[in-house]
Amino acid sequence: MRLFGFAIVLFIAAPLVIVVPMSFSTASSLQFPPPGYGWQYYVSYFNDPGWLRPTWNSIFIASAVTVLTMLLVTPAAFALVRHRFRGKGAANVMMMMPMAVPHIVMAVGYYSVFGQMGIVHTKIGVILAHTCLSVPIAFLVLSANLKGFDRTLERAARSLGATPAQTFWHVTLPILRPGLVISALFAFIQSFDETVVAIFISGRNAETLPRKMFDSIRQEADPVIAVISTLLFVAVALGLIAPILWRAAAKSLRRGPAPAGRA
Amino acid sequence: MASLSKLAERSNLWPWLLLLPLAGYMAIFFVIPLADVAIMSVTEPKPSLANYEKVLTGALYQKVFLNTFLTAALVTVCCLLVGFPLAYLMSVSTPRVAMLILLLVTMSFWTSFLVRTYAWMVLLGNNGPAIWAMGMLGIENPPRLLFTRFSSTLAMVHMLAPYMIMNIYSVMKKIDPALVRSAESLGARGGSLLRHVYLPLTAPGIANGSVLVFVICLGFYVTPVLLGSPREQMIAGLIGHQIEEFLNFGLGSAMAMILLAVTLAILAVYHRRFGLDKLWG
Image 1 (cartoon, rainbow over the protein chains, first blue to last red):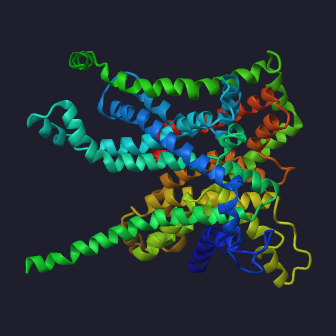
Image 2: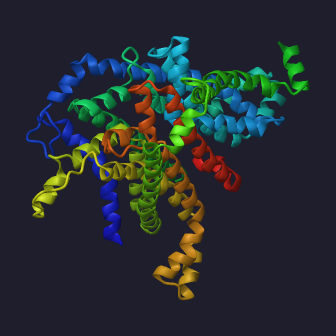
Image 3: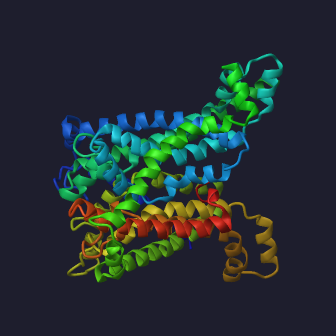
């Protein structure tokens, strides 16, 4: 049983780890173990506009998607969590729908409709499409946070003479900030990683990083992909491990001086 | 402004005002593209049901649909075979080990499909470790691994297993150890403990994970296209092919509508039994 468990862990870990040595390879084709190690593909990534431009496009598009998604989702989450009205159930289901529809189906629709609107192969088109696909995950995270919100804090602010606007700015928003940040982060990642719709509508002008990677893997498997894969993998690893270390550090700090203070 | 907000409060307009921007957005950028696919499927190149007739009766299309279903079923079963034992091991190991495995699974979950697809190309490639290991074991002419049904299925299992593991683990870690102990004290061992205690108690997680994996797999585009055999396409790949290569929007849309109908039917059944909000929560 233990051996089987070890095999599964290896199965999950191996593909994640293997991209790191590959990125330092000197081989021009997929060869593992690499014949030699060097920085050459890192140098070519950071000097090749063919890779840097899609990287910036992706960052720009995902940032715009995040802003637009949060502007749309935040008021909607308030409406659906805090108010009762007819059609609420339907509105909730509608909000989750883009998650249920396979992306290839949306890709066909965007390709055709955006083509008629003249925004296919533009950044604005990708932003508009990705925002729609980011809505469900951003909404899920934010509404879960909003459901756990203790409304007595708002009532306390109101009873102390704050106007509804002041209460919102000085009480509601600061308490909700962590939820808003995580929700925005999910929207960003959803857009940054989205591949299928981007393949069909981003074209050469608005080429995103996943689209460039897809084309490159399909055509010649440029070793630079290993560099990008390593950078993306390291970003994920840091993103997951940093909060754990941070919490551990905060805990030990809090634990440290406490007994001394009491003594 | 104040009087407007009072009016809104009194007539219960507030929720509608707050929902309006998003509802408008979704109407334009979600409903219209989907409706366009539906319309194209019956109007391109001319108004008729010919596209559906071709897709539902043509041997090639039937083969692709069947292949898609079988692959999705196989991937789901494999994810269960990977996910259930691992979730079990996590629930019985020390918190530190369980945390490390969970961290690894989460890392895999958040790593882009493309990165993982590329990694499998390296692992299974002709100059990769899998072929090398077979050579070491004395296999003279190792079979081609890449661009086969095997490589795309294996990679899809790797990509979707985290969904299964997280779903099963989230219910398994809530199992009261007292239940397990009392079952053991009544003589339940190994197989019967698994069958009578763990399986029924983790059934919701298994159902969640399986539905999610199966549905995602049905519409999977990237990995089958990059790693699979060109002769054994899945439905999403074939839709893309019709649009990109042949600009055949009618046929592509008809296939897309069938894929959508099947996906929504599965999710609707699930929604009526368990509630859709649980699936991703």
